[in-house]
Amino acid sequence: LMRDAAAFAARHGLFVQTHLSENEGEIEATRAAFPEAPDYLGVYEAAGLAGERSLFAHAIHLSPSEWDRIARSRSVLVHCPDSNFFLGSGRMRLPVSRCRMWRAPEKAKSTLWRAVSGDMSFHTCTGSQW
Image (cartoon, rainbow, N blue to C red; front, side, top):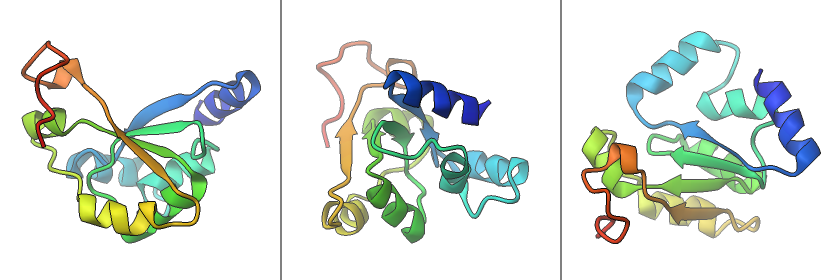
């Protein structure tokens, strides 16, 4: 299914958005479901879903290798600090992301987003005060 999604997205020039390393339970469940993958990101890489048109939400609990591979693939991290706080997921380690991604020759991208369903406010002008 993920390989088909990657092929369809490539064929039509679409972006693909999914979650990545939001919380420890999700990471463990992914590891159990895909024991052949080196880590959570490896699942998406094997399916062809890591690249310039890949949007990974959360990305809180990444390994050093995952940070580097995201930068090389030019994938985009989309992060909502309010949602992650409200859900109890944790915080993105911004100094690590700057060091590992923003200094990379590939110039990986990250952005903020608003997750209305995982936030305490429905107003897009509040929150993300970090």
